[in-house]
Length: 637
Image (spheres, one colour):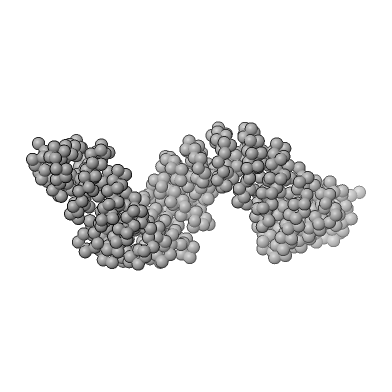
């Protein structure tokens, strides 16, 4: 009669941890079930220890299928949440298993194995437990097996089943196998394209993902064979496949009619998507030229419902998608997603924090939420926070008018420490942020260091950044020393490259700096402004006319052009902008054109527009307009 303990060993896969008991161990070694029974036992295990216990007993009788089944089971337990911790005493067993797999793959017996053997083996290597990397001998064994399986797979892949080909592509991409990129592209054209109708939807989705992961843009041959198959089977694609294909097409910047079909399927089945899949879709929309605002709104709302399941990188991807695609959603949705991030962001990297802060600022999230994210970013180790990231966090704080003294004090310290790492774009954004909202909260020495740094690196600035720095420093009443003259000289030299908003901004700064002895708004800037006045918006026209008057510039074509554009666009002006133009004309004693009737018509049009909105005009504007109208006596009834 067999004991109960013996019957348990024979009929179940649950081996007690009795490897140290010689009697039971000796019995197990003598008991050799057939390969199919071994595979069944392996499939019923629940821990890596159980798998390796079977391997230790029966290793010498394992065929190729048993060997790869063991490795696959360990990897599957790791990937899908089972207990995959490998005890130290079983490391040698796993090492022996890896070496046995390598020998079988390279032997004559390996030539008769199916594609599933190689595909599952590589899949297992791609998803092995992280603890493998802690053991040098295992790292070497894994690398050797990976190389052997890849070489043998390349020799036989043309004869494999479609699902094994797709599995091989996925595993190579997940492993980022060095030879995978060209091999994946070659297999896509020579094996997959001719047999596209044979592949299941999941297989084709995995192939697309693999190509994108390896950064290999598919050939026209592949696209013409595979995309029509996916389009005809779009209704069969599940949420994971839809997200994977959209992500792949966005990553490789592929535009195809398939995109519209996929969007239609996504819109009708968005409730089936997991939090991670929603994040992948949002990233795809942010990267792709094909933006569907309706779907992006649904993604944001659905993600807010699943916010307890969305991880930190997922929140960042969804918010970035909304920001890049200029999708305006309810601020409460953005705040909920951001709050979820703050609760679940332990260990997230600094790039994720900074990216989310930027997205929330663009989406006009509430200032307290953005301040909390900025604070989280500033609490990262100083060594990991680069100057460009500090500049971006400063821009974010300025954009939403953060006023938290602790956050801004920390920001000031980071600016002082990393200013030498700032690029010209970073410096321009920093100057804008300080001028727009933060100058009251940042210490004066920091502002002066920023000004000195801008002056020192002035020749590095492209024209558009010159205008940004000029406006910012003039707003902060900085630049009257070493910055104003060289900046205006450089702006005059680069006038042909300046946009309307830049021209108006530099003219305004020159007017603010008029008492500093700086170079004034020169002929090149005036000529470029004349050429592009039709592109000026109302605020640009207002700033230009005010600057011309303050600097007492006698440029009749420029002034006439400003008046003409102001009359054409009068309906879109803010009252203060109109007041500025009327004041400027009076200040200059406007006499162009010489026809009094024309002058009367222009002045009447502008002042009537002001009179119609007097309740919106501030006291200073009313005073300036009254003085201007008195100056125009004789021209206006």
